[in-house]
Image (cartoon, rainbow, N blue to C red; front, side, top):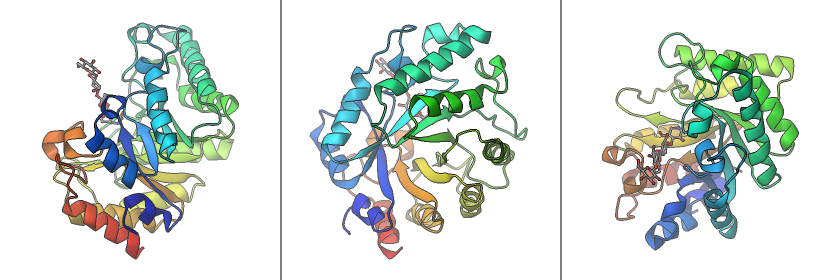
Length: 302
Ligand code: G3I
């Protein structure tokens, strides 16, 4: 196959990208995205500050722009994200306790009602675990509402739309030996044992010199999948875009039957949240980089 999406589809997987509503008027951008990808994650447009800028007043204008573009191009959409410590609107940042807990529940219900039946996945909870060696939860206003906030979010989400797959999504959980990875693994294991509704775990996969790719990523994917959840690579970018590392990540997912697909976090290097790292598959002029050829080759060989 000659595109990432078609090559991934040979094994029943998708290949996605983050899309920004503000770039949908850039034809160089939409030409590449429309040709190569089969899944879209709105880069910012379905986040809490975008969808509920004032409490109880929902705004889906930008989210719908990305959603409609994806559907018009035959792509599926991954919702991102319903409960997160970051990109909260000011009104939410100032809430705490039961008021914040109820606002989180109302937010999940409001956003999921709008997109009910339309999305393939939702990142229900994003980045809830702490960096470093503790393996514990990240401190946040949501965490301070009580340790059960994550399971409440998932139970609320299942009731709001029983047909969308519900994911936990985080970064620096690719290294099986990391305390953060073990903390998330223990939570997912506990959720599965108690019937808390969780369908998938997203591994963001933002690799850089400080947090490099390690070959035990495949072990991590296998061990989470063995808990009975789908796994996915959800925000892939690699500082310097080593063709070898991109191929390794591709092959790690291909080796795990429950690894359902790939998403790179942007189209061209110039679209990246860390463009100085040139971490993506297309350069700023839209040319395919060696990493592109490497990923396509791995998908076609797998
Ligand atoms: O749109 C406003 C613009 O109106 C304003 O003038 C400008 C001034 O700062 O800000 C613009 O918003 C920025 C937005 O991106 C759109 O470009 C925000 O400041 C900026 O913070 C925001 O950054 C996003 C970041 O999440 C915020 O946390 C990045 O685009 C986005 O790629 C990044 O994505 C995250 C995932 O959601 C979660 N995992 C990590 C990943 C990378 O940080």
